Image (cartoon, rainbow, N blue to C red; front, side):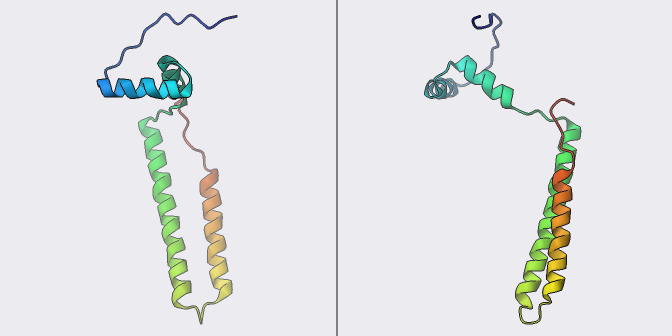
Length: 112
């Protein structure tokens, strides 16, 4: 069985320089521009407004965790002589739990 019949054209506007770059990229990849565009679009994830908000919340939460980690590191560097290793380890373990929890939360998909 051969290639599927692709008889429908999709037109987009581009500058001549962009078109030339795309064709050169397709040649370097050993494929047609059409195949390159199909592959690139197939790999592109789309986001709904709800997905953007979920991802924004995840980034904000991750920034808070990073801030906590920086505070612990600063404290440990400032109080090296008096640092209670058990206390530092406890804080680091709490952060590790937060990061694992964060990593296992459901991420948005591109199908709704």
